[in-house]
Amino acid sequence: MHFPTRYRVVISLMLLLLALILLVPLAPYALAYVQGAGGVANPGTELWREVRQGVPGQTQVQGTDTGTLIGAGGEQWRRFRMEQLVPYSAVIFAGVVGLFVLYFLIRGRIRITAGRSGRLIQRYTLSDRWIHWFMAVVFLILMLTGLVLLYGRWILIPWLGPEGFSATAQFCKSAHNLTGLLFPVAVVLVLFAYLREALFNFKVDITWFLRAGGYLGGKHPSSGKINAGQKAWYWTVVVGGVLLCVSGLALYFPDFVQSRELLRNAYQVHTLVAVFIIAFFFVHIYLGAIGMEGSLEAMTSGSVDANWAKEQHDLWYEEVRGQPEPDPPGAGGIAAGGVASPRPDD
Amino acid sequence: MARMKFLCDAERCIECNACVTACKNANEVPWGINRRRVVTINDGSPGERSMSVACMHCSDAPCAAVCPVDCFYFTDDGVVLHDKDICIGCGYCFYACPFGAPQFPANVAFGGRGKMDKCTFCGGGPEPDNSPEEFRKYGSNRLAQGKLPLCAEMCSTKALIAGDGDVVSEIFRERVTYRAASGLAWGWGVAYGKPGQRRASGLENKASSQD
Image (cartoon, rainbow over all chains, first blue to last red; front, side, top):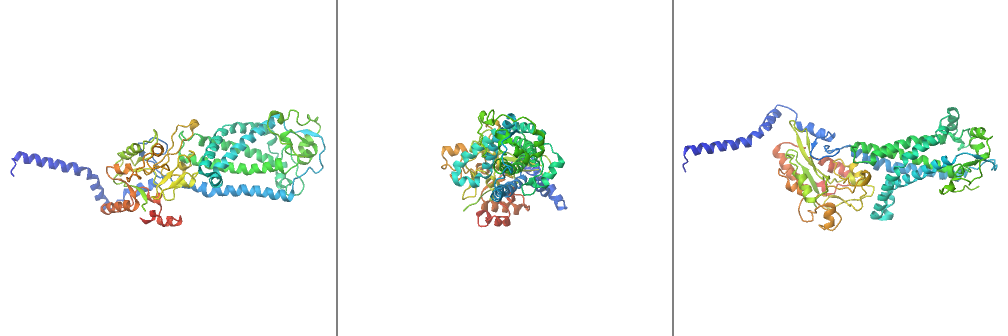
């Protein structure tokens, strides 16, 4: 085969061009290889460290956190939820309930020592009681639906099956979200309704705490309209309620701009505060409705027996003893408003 | 028994996003949902690297651990799947996943999440294989057809490899031997753990431990 010279030149040039096209892009690699041989650190090492630390890169996918390849916070959150929150909260709740069962078995119901006097003292107005029971209903719904979502996988799936529990959990999630919108309203109402009586009177309240409210024996300490324990409960509800509302709202609208880090932190705040409040709630239920004779009627009929007031809230009794007796219980009571009102046994 | 794994070779990925497109094409996912994405680290600087990432089908999957309704399950091939009829869209899997794999359609009132959607390794869901319901909820079930995920099959530089972990790691080992570099496979340490961790999790006899 013999080509004319000009063909040979053209073919050579095209081969050269092809070689250049294939080889020129490799120049940086060749350079890096030469430099690498000179002892320069592998740039890959630094790169993978950044990836593991969650340094975000560029991506075409729009969304929050989409540039992060490995988010290490998820593992921490998993450990928090599965190894700390679920088991420890269960132990705390069971412990509190168990202690009260024990207390009830040992001590029984704490009676009004002097018996009922038959004379009533107005303690909570109708609006005070409405606010209390509004908060109570909202709180109970939120607590029960929240607990179903927290423990249902272990407690309810064996009973309801996966499909049945899925429907239950779906309902509880919606109910939790919708009722949650009322919770800030309830917190603000509670904040203003009982603020005056919940301000601390340090001398009286510290004494009350030091004597554990007289529940473990010893002399019953003095207290104003509400005692130091009730004040602690009030501030727990108000401060914890605000924290629950703020963290709950962050969790409520996941499609705004929250990073996963923020959602995980909001979850931790939300659950820790909820566990604390629920544990305290069990205390509140026991002392308000079960363990003490004559306490519950303060929030149902609105008035209490004078002897109960004298024994439980002596300072408050001194303030109000001269006031006229309220209307007989039932008249204008909360039962008339349509809310179930369990009568305390006498 | 095969143990399905993804591997993205960062030395080969050129950020063409064909895997992302292929995934959408194979599974017809709703608007706004991206089961797979390509991330470029140090974009525009010397030494930039791109990686394609989706669900890594972890051995000890965090999503399955935290799910409050226990809707995840593992196939015999080690693929992590979930049941959309059970999912309540709480988003916990999204908090826990290191790779950002779970996706949520934003079509529910009050900013709520719809049912979670994620990469199925083209393995469908609990419905009968390749039934219309399965396709509507989870996309195609290529595994049941004897095929591998479309993202990996479409990859032009064969950066993204999917398949049995033994085969995949053998391919990668060969590459590394020729390339005289190491440790550049994306995500394996996190998704499948070190042998010691797998032993601690009681996974030592699983296929994933035999690589």
